[in-house]
Image 1 (cartoon, rainbow, N blue to C red):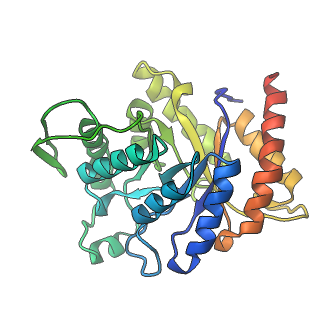
Image 2 (cartoon, rainbow, N blue to C red):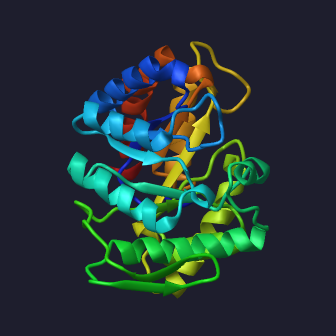
Length: 297
């Protein structure tokens, strides 16, 4: 049993489809009132999708308190120095409400069709490691930044403006190499239940924790977010993350106090607004109360 004691956070995972823009903005308004995050998919090669970064800027402009995060940024199609500049700009404009989640890449044929690289798993891992270093350099107070990697190079670029706050870097990764890197260098982990179901998480958490401890870091400083794709209904269900408020409350509470996850991002079919409202109004308060009881708060 692992509970890192971190504050609970909740959010909505949204699809940047052009024909769902009004619904997305309504979900952002709901999140601004009741939740902590709006997480936006980033798949530039999808013809029906708006550019995620344009959408995130719009969401930030229309909200007051909710944080926004790409979930996860398509690194192969977005050079890290430019990512760092854009992320810092959104953070300044929004008053410190932007965090950054990165992935090594997927859907390589689609990426290559759009002019991006077609990397092997090893190349993708190395590129992600380099990107984290490049981004942190671009957020530093150095006057001129240089970096020589296999995939990215900086030749005396002048970084700035600085972010409004220390932007967190979360990684959507699952392999041993990347989990070790995350424990050493990153601020958060954001797996998805469709790839990594709950029973897989404890062993992965241990890899992150072991790497963090070896690097002299406190494992509890690392955010443990979970993209959960499911359905909120009025009846229970034998399938995980497809059921009633009570079922969801029990499942998320267990993920928090037994598995150590602290941030839950809900995704539903067609970004269903009614389910999002039940999540925000009923499930989130119930989970907060249940976890507080377990912790003796």
